[in-house]
Amino acid sequence: MKRVLTFFGAPGVMLARTVRASLREGVPWRETLAQVHALGGRSVWLVMSGMAFFGAVLVTIANAQAKKLIGNVAVLGPAYFEMLVRELGPAVSALLTAARAGASHSAELSTMSVNEQVEALEMSAGDPYADLVAPRVLAGVVGVPMLCVLGTVAATLSAVVVASLAFDIDGRAFMDARYVDGWDVLVAVLKAVGCGLYIPLAAAVAGLKARGGAEAVGEATTDGVVAASLGCLLIDLTVSLAFQFVRL
Amino acid sequence: MAAPVSSAALAWLGRSVLGAVEGVGALALVAGRTAWALPRLERRELARGLVQFGYGSLPLALATAAMAGVIVVVQAGIYIQRFGARAFLGWAAGYGVLWEFGPLLLGLIMSARIGARNAAELATLKVGGQIEGLRGIGLDPFALLVAPRVVAMEVSMLALSTFTFLVAILCEAVAAKLTLNLPLRVFFGTFADMLSPFDIVGGVVKTGAFGLAISLVSTAVGLRAKGGARAVGEAAASAVVLGCAAIFLLDFLLTTLLSRWS
Image (cartoon, rainbow over all chains, first blue to last red; front, side, top):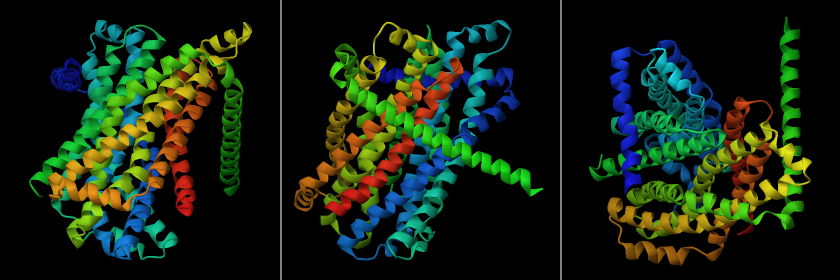
């Protein structure tokens, strides 16, 4: 029970402190840009290749199912595109980002904690929340939605190519935006922004707690990745189910 | 002015190919030496690995399973809403989780959790010169460090796969009831009718292959680390990325192979 409370509470407290500190101290913009590059720019390849693969898998499954039922999967293309935009695109892109960015954030911050650099920053009138956590959180809120867009595009294109080349069906049906409306886009944006906010916070909680030596860095890295991934899964589930219930 | 550009491109290509060959070689070397060290593996390390990799990953694995189940229901729900093919959901859900989404998501999550940790631990030992220390006193680091991790990972993945499949299917049934109003009886009825035991075997084979890939890639990356504290962080990050890449590749190969077979 205590662990559950900590899991949900600690990032919330971290967010409150970060917001308060950044309002008081201001946010270092240059550092924020560097973090956007570190989180976004360096995860682009992983997210795009992962999502391209995911799109191919999705088409393979759809084809297998359609063969049992109706024969041609192209009829379902628009429905699949809606699902990709609304559910799978943001969810899987955010998960891949959580693995990479969560690991690197918590490793960086825990190394700083272990080497007492965080205390040194406080001694020199810096604020760890405003100077270290806030740029990463902003980078997450900006970067994860961008990565989700790129990932969804990659998945769609790969689905089209695989359908056309491997299964001899008109793959262009998979990029038909007939069923996509504002609600789908809203769900996707909510998921992406939620995950983008949560990943750096969870990694920061794990990273700034680290005390000890190299062993502690390893522990903190694992904890950060686990918390970030689990948080993303829960956010996606909550948003999806909430919108399913009100039938939007 | 094309000359410098093309030579730079050629140099990059050459470096990439050499890197790839070197990587495959290192992987083969680690696999071979691990197999060689299997009879002499350290039992206590194996027990520790089993607790860390298997029991410690349970919460995350179960959350992943729930996510996979909901994804598949949402995906198969398209057919239900368009064609009213309610009897088909059980099969579609089972097939999706057992064959694709279950193993794939479990593999990615475990690659992030265990791969990063393995690589970071071994890289710390390597950078600190402790691996050479072991060799110096006549101990085989593969028997002490690598083989127990590989075996523990394999056992954990197979055990976790069974759990995740069960949880995923239960979550699917509940999600189908909540979102599509499909009675549980219908769901499990079609489930039993349209799935064969081979489908379960396919999922287990895939998960086992992913487990082997993750443990071998992460230990190979960790053992190749050179430098200081930065190398440890880089090893952790590249273990995650390479592990994911290996999983994608294996998934593609196994899907094509196993679907030929069935």
